[in-house]
Length: 200
Image (cartoon, rainbow, N blue to C red; front, side, top):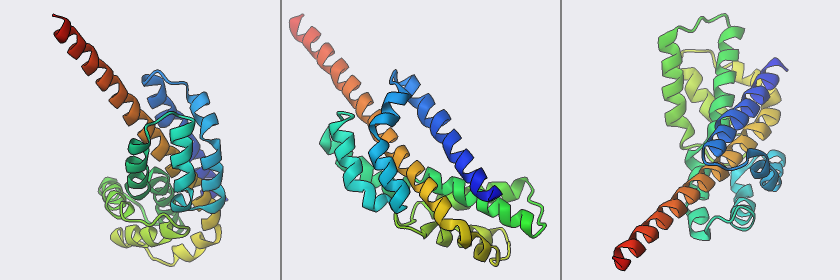
């Protein structure tokens, strides 16, 4: 339960600080943003599948957040495969849990290896329930940790998988919204410069 609590707390803090802070920098209201995406977040939480949530994410992003459909249809599937912040948090917490369980002390080089391995392996993880266990095996193996810890973690995997999937989906929609806003601002600036040049 400590592992579950750590994963949930880390995911909530990540969404509040990283996503919320990014939205503030873009002069967008975080509370309004999360309120608008509550439906895809709830679907992600209950299904533990970012792939299953993808149609809902696209519809919500285009309808409620007013993101151009071509941007949403390109970035959201891309994010479902490569933007896996929640999975990275979960695998990190689970690996540290396994190290503590077996009394293995991790040094700085181990933590660097942990980060690099997660970055490489998480990018190819499928957007389906249980994919984190496969990534977890690769990460623990890179640190020389006994894979027997996975059998313990599987017991609470579903609970953690739900939260990390919700974090992933929120991150995909956040990134898509930020990119769309930047594109709209750039096109607006371009049109402004173009109109000024034409008038002169």
